[in-house]
Length: 358
Image 1 (tube, rainbow, N blue to C red):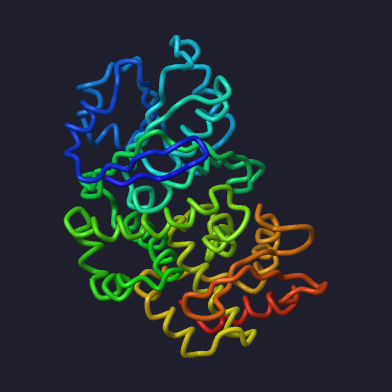
Image 2 (image 1 turned 135 degrees about the vertical axis):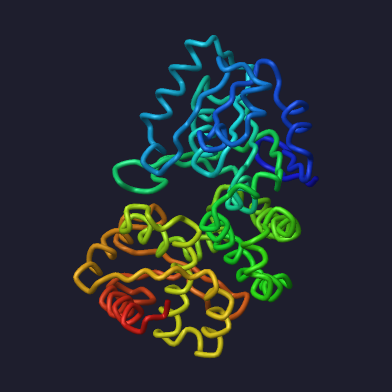
């Protein structure tokens, strides 16, 4: 177990508690569950131990991570007699977390919530950090706030039922922390990649704790994403646009992996890093790269999605590029007094696809 400091106080992450023991000890009689339908169907413990009147079953997907879903949940909570001193419990991945935490942040001006992350991406990344986000107007994570949970219960038991693609998605986010910190586990993950994908329940524990430890150090210095924490957007500006362009057929962590490789390539093409450094990063990303090609006639669509990223300022695209190993920096793209011009970025994107870096 370790603790995370936040503006609302300290919250705890609990590891390796058997699932049934965790459910019995952490979920109270007045708690209300928001649970991913896939998890609900696979783990009968939740309908065996918890009254169905205290459960909201969510069909988790980017298309449901909306205000409408949150409004529906709030209506159900109010109708059920839910009070300000009661708590929500999210059971699922990042989408379930976002819907639950956003709802908790606005209902009664803020209520407590707990989280059982069931995906690798949620266990190794999103479960800490306070952020709550939902999609709006065809833009990912446009609305949100900072509302940390009171407790996180990390059971790697959930990982045994995840599809391989979901494991790879989680590894994508973990890689972006490992590259940021140049973690000692980066080489281990590259070497053990296939074993981790095949047997995450048994092998992933130390990698999850390392990922969260790297993130915790940063978010305790910059919880509200105003300063240095923004380097954690490495791979995300390019990755979020790939998610949207693919109509979310490319999962988040896999899109982030592609996004990191694009960011590294752009840095190479603009003489920010040398080829040796690019190849060092690429060596650690290539196992997790999913083939995805953007035709030349869709580059403009992709660029327009980059322009809609919430991290941008004015007419600039704000992205994170590597300037060396363990050296990620905020970089602006525009045609006025910035690091890289718009036309140059578009040419680099075309070149990336044509070079078949994936």
